[in-house]
Image (cartoon, rainbow, N blue to C red; front, side, top):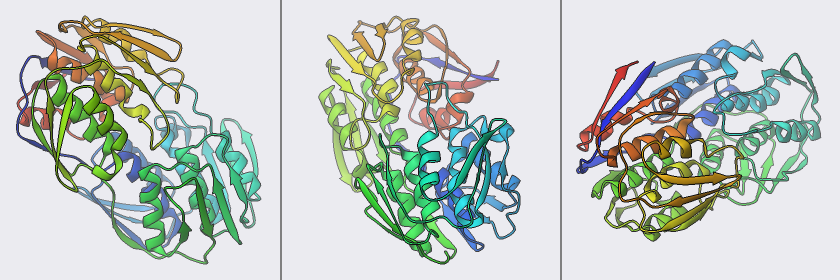
Length: 417
């Protein structure tokens, strides 16, 4: 396994280009199952999760060609309708093939998903929605086995907004008889990105980005040439890196339209933002002020930015509180940050962060994807050397992070354990 060695205390400068969104690319790749034509995708990041989805689609019988950030997918010969445990266990987003398989083929066997150990993320909402559309579903030996002669339009209400649930039902509904209404739908920009691509393929989807999405079934979808959105979480991570190191950097390809909640908290904590265009901004700061954060579904503050802000707040001039409302086990990074001299108490779904004068380098261990990013951010500001192990978590969601940080002037390198 690889690890990071970070020598802290260096300011960042220059510009960084944000990669395509992982959370947008994965459902869009799964949507290639809905057509027998070529799906050409641009701006797809080179990540472990993307490679896992490629392997999964190839296992289902799709042809995938990759050249840098461009993917050409053709699922004309998709025949295997089983998503195996060996692939699904490492990435929860594998459940996204469930909806497309049911929509096009009327049958699917998908292993119960895995992913980061940040809490229980049940797929029962997906199952209940597909059952309401006429699918006969059972759980057999750890697999979701689903079949239906033809899915029917229905009214789907989610008790809580679910991003992958909304995406799965959208894809399951494109060929359904009649009209499907998704109520209390997830409003995330990645959901909108998927809807935009499906509509470009010939789907009839209205209301993406609102709490009610309406899908009128169509007979077929064509191929498409589409560029996925840029990654708002990666952009937010670099914003936090600039603030904790008291640096000014320029971020290119920043999805300004999707980052209101992050911008608001970033400015409240002491950062400044100079938006130069619709996809470029200069960010930075010096003093770090204590604030309170409560994670929420979009357009609220994203749970995927909670850990990075916790690192920043560990150096605030006062006490901050973070309340996590999405996942029940997402403060594992707090103990590791404390090894760097932070003063964080996490009880239940609340963490109290008492600002300290400085962070001090130490050996720490990444526990999940965003926790990895929080430790990198803390290491950039820590006095001395920080060694972060188990960074394979980080490779699931950040493209060439050490290279991008090095180009900004950080002293970070990847070495073998």
